[in-house]
Image (cartoon, helix red, strand yellow):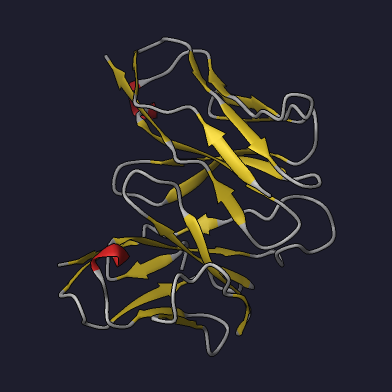
Length: 120
Length: 111
């Protein structure tokens, strides 16, 4: 598609439920990122994929968070046993460049509209 | 470490007023700097960027200059419009795969 697509746009979960958030990046984009944006805050890094390889998951807040990108395109962020502090907007971004790659220029991210998760 | 500090909002301006949103950064090495804009109900969109010291990024009448000596990347626009109402995020990217964002500055332009 023309942009990064995320679904669902809104998700309400009861505490303890598992949720799955989907990201469809721009076709052909090598790099895919997940960010968490709490209310009134800037996005914070969760994890990064280069094709199907998860090269950095240092931002995942706990082992309840899991992300995958099995075929190097669509990615899913799964949160198990959701807690109220997980309530946030989860942003997906993709880039045609390899993060930290050579060749100069900047690694420009294209963001999706986000999935707003509310945990009751 | 890497971090971005930007001016807290909210900012309210009248149409055609001059806009400045301050942004300073801390980084190791030589980061690239960005301004992203988030309109209501939409995802973050790249507004402008600069990749090295003294570069000026510009787009849609907005400008920001990468000042290494003051570690700043302030956003300016000479005459704002109602359609510029949004949340603006300053960000940096270093040699790696992480972007570091400021907390955002909400701008409301009134007619």
